[in-house]
Length: 592
Image (cartoon, rainbow, N blue to C red; front, side, top):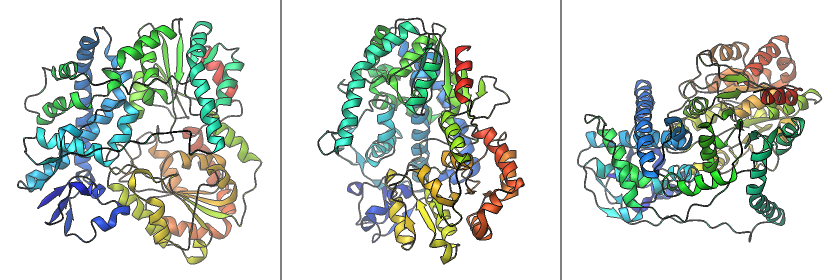
């Protein structure tokens, strides 16, 4: 029997029975490659609740172990003396991502070879291995097939198996102004001008202001309003962009990553992941680190009291170095929530990381009972949406908007969303929901898939083929424009769009699978209230029955005193907005 680890059919053998490692191998847009072969798909280990929880806890322990040891190792490599927190700010997001992904791939292979010890398979040759540039590059690679083939191939070899290998060249796309419309060209040129001005502008702010505000995931105009109202005591920090992709990997230096001596000799995965570090450790943390750090030390020479940011903690490598450097001289690091699942999901590694490294963290209304650093604050975007909702009229004959999301075919983190092939179950629940509705409701529906064909699931195509008579949103209108036009929103994911719909005060239903969308203890009472009044369903057929019940008069149902009371309590906790958000923000930031 032949083991296929990814969807790359060039690494399959169809002249024998094929064992697919997971449903990520069966790409919908490549059905012709696998529909007519004799195959079997292995069960996903994380469908087992206890196995999932053990894996989550184990990855957290490995993270703490590796972070402590990599702190010492990186200090040696770069001839510096920085704290564990310093290196956690810089490498923590990637390290979390890599550990969770690598352990998932390891366990899938381990269980497979234990059950089928004589499997044949085809691996990627070392000549074709890639080293990620930074976290953004790693995220892009780790959700696609070629790099995952690399991870599986490394694991198979490190686990002691010898299998035949083949080269594979990963295609890269070059971006050019040619081929873009005029408006896109203008935007790109404006961005290039800002990029050239950024060092001067940021250096000026570093000297004139002791508080810097970076990438906030809100309108640039709102960031400017904050700065203006503060009298530029708060200075806008332009995105720090540097190209380090030209640096070749230094294999001699990278071998020093193997010098982690206190690993548990009885833990095979611990030894394997250490062996995998030299090839997979991003360039920005080894070869590019000194260039980034020297640039930061040259540009940001002033005394900085506070750095405020929302998305830079995860994806902007120069910003992370800036924050890490300033943190060691006493600068206050202020994180700001940028996603709707924060404070709600039981397992959310990104949230835990950002709260951990920050001195203070602005949430969208929620608190942590055991953590005083989390401060509820009105979100500017939600505040605008709240104001916009006051003077609108819900069309009683409007459409029903069904919102769908999507996730990677390969596990990214152990977190409270559909992971890996569980996305198929998530999609199936939506099919069941729609099929349970009568034709007269189908005629009023708009299905809004994720905004582009992400991760190879072919989500829009699946909806079109299953429901040819239902309109599929082409995203020619924004989500907010769609909200204006509909009489009812049905959300199948417990994230930002659900919160925004609730804030906009349009009739809203949510249906989610409790096995996938696990709710944390602090949020559970609020979701119990949503369930009690019928906003939340845990099962798709139940949600369809609710749509049928309220379809003829969604407005009367939604604006009942009971529904509105529960809605207001919910959004004040998880989607806080205020007409005075600007004053509240500036007062808090100026006096922090």
